[in-house]
Length: 100
Image (cartoon, rainbow, N blue to C red):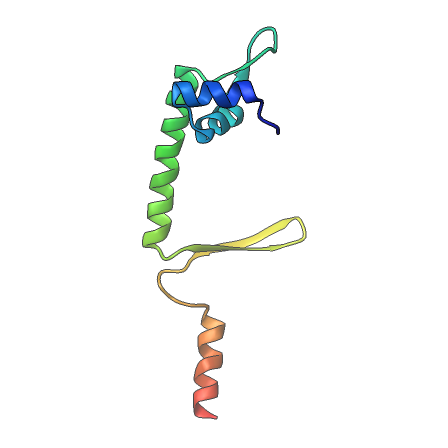
């Protein structure tokens, strides 16, 4: 999306970064007359709560060394945590190669 000279000037005057503009565009909702996007305090609190929850999930996954989901077409088949192990099939193949 293009940025007007007016917006660039106001962003500079008000110390508003392009990151803030992107957040408002991503999370904001239209005003009643659809004239502008508004990112209000209530939406910000909800976004922070969701971000905190996401961070907890990501840290938990990191401690488990990641996770995988097996799928085919539109069917989810199985899922598992890695727990620091590489793919067992790959380890078996490596062990076979060492003995060859």
